[in-house]
Image (cartoon, rainbow, N blue to C red; front, top):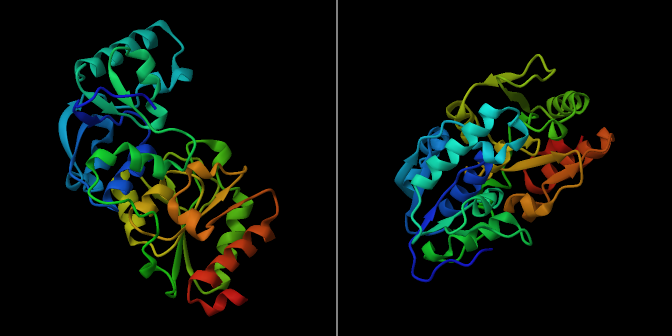
Length: 298
């Protein structure tokens, strides 16, 4: 973590992934904080307003960028025009910054501190869970101590439906189609309504999947769900934001520094290594332990 100038003004600068921003919004929404100044890229505006983030942040400036900064997608830079666009984007960000102020970055945005020397940046470390690190990042605005425990009023109730989000932008995180079919069959046998949701641009082999096209549709879906099964992707952090119980299926050993406090508290995740029965057993045990569903004993 970089050291900021004493007594300098602090402003949140979220210029990378959507999930990073949702984690920040979750931290602020579950504590008591002063409203935090933010410099908001255009591409985050839809998500910002869908999560009603004007309650937690006030916008100081808007960065006229309509997509991810290419600085964080260097693998897409394949031509001279891409390099020119990258330089242009850096200039756009630089125009929004003041050298006397301090900017709070997401962990994956720390590359900016190398590209723009002479500016003051602080970003989370990698040695603890990201939700705890983010709480430290915003500590100057906090009016109480962050409580990572879950609102347990959502537990010990009978659930009637399960929403599954199998997709991810990163292909290695996607729930395997064979496992997905067995999950749907398993939950249906428990007399639960099962719905599978994928983004309209995702190429996923499941004919009954319901497609959503934007953040507005996604946030409405998640805000209405009772319980979610998901790949390691954005819907997980949205579920935590909306206080929705969630269970995550990984395809590799998870880095627990990047999971939600709910997943930590309730051991709400499992790793799929080809053994479908092991995953079903883990979920069955989880439902039996935390929800009032007698049918889970089947």
